[in-house]
Length: 152
Image 1 (cartoon, rainbow, N blue to C red):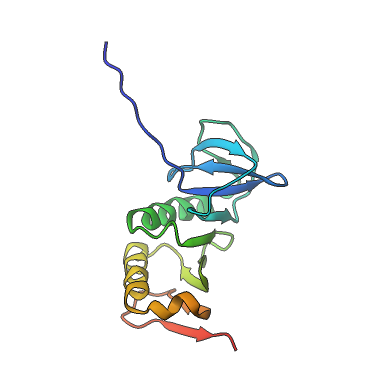
Image 2 (image 1 turned 90 degrees about the vertical axis):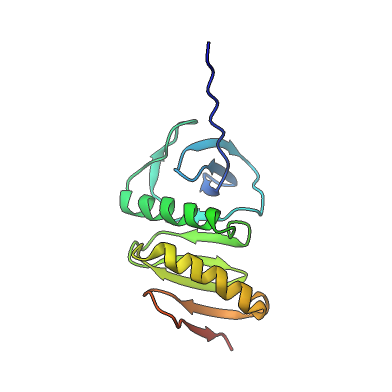
């Protein structure tokens, strides 16, 4: 007999009913439903769904937003950024946004998503002041220069 075990890890939380969270993996599979969450992974917003099955991939009404969530959740996890991103908002599929410290990062759609998330990792590494900054970082298009607008 051969037993194959596939471990699944939480990569985000989807708010579900008041005060409850769906713990999901990088593919959108519902791992558990709980009243608490860890601060180590982002809260995912913008998904519309009505039916939840434990152990199944979340059945959403907006599949394009779900696709964006899967892509960005995987890239954040791969690049070691999941623990510093507090929110992943896929409500606008043309402008996926994440909340990083006190910065709203506008990522646009998923074109060049890998490049943008890798660039974000470099920005965080090279600009430690981002942790204390408040504003918006515009990364909607692939570029070697991104615009940061500080809140005053």
